[in-house]
Structure formats: structure tokens, C-alpha cells
Image (cartoon, rainbow, N blue to C red; front, top):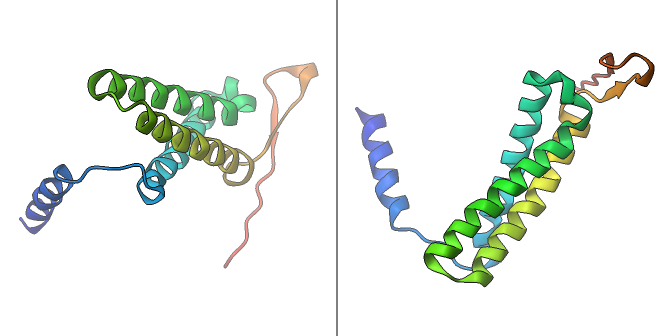
Length: 129
């Protein structure tokens, strides 16, 4: 019951919050881009092995296209082109970082042998902190 009350309370608080064009407000779009592109990159790696060599670019592209579509709808409904373009720009910058880091450092690097398409060699490095 406590979890349910906390969830309802957080939803009520969040419904009254709105963003502006300040850097602290736009950071949420940057962070969202990192998470979204990283997640898409990992999904492509896991479920679409035929696209593994392009997984980073696919994560960036899909995340960027999604925010452009979403911000276009927001502009059509509410106007404020400057704010919508700022939101999209911060998200796209985050998408670039998220896809790159996920592809190059979190997932094992992939080397495709062009002579025998479909074969990949991965390298996994681990370090304990």
C-alpha cells in the first residue's frame, strides 16, 4: 500500500511540473537521449545480430528520429519552436553520446569478417573497482 501511495503522490507532483528553456531543464532531454540511444543500441545488439556492426548508428538514428517526431507534434499542438528545437537538440546530443558509449565501451566491440559475412569476433574487457 505504501508503494501505491508513493506512486500516486509522485504522479500528482510530476503532473504540475513543467519545463522551461534553462540548461538545468534541458539536461533531462540530454539524459533521456543517453538512455534511449543506449537502450536501442543494446536491443539491436541482442535481438538483431545481422545489424550488430551498425548498432551504434542505429541507436543514434532511431532515438533522434523519435525525438524529432515527438517535438514536431509538440510544436503543432503548443507552438514555441525555439523551445521544441532546444529540446530536440539536447536529446540528439545525448543520443550521440549514449549510442557511442554503449557501442564502444559497454557492449563488446564487433569485428565483421567481410569474406564470411555473418561471423563476428567480440572482445570483452572487465575491471573490478
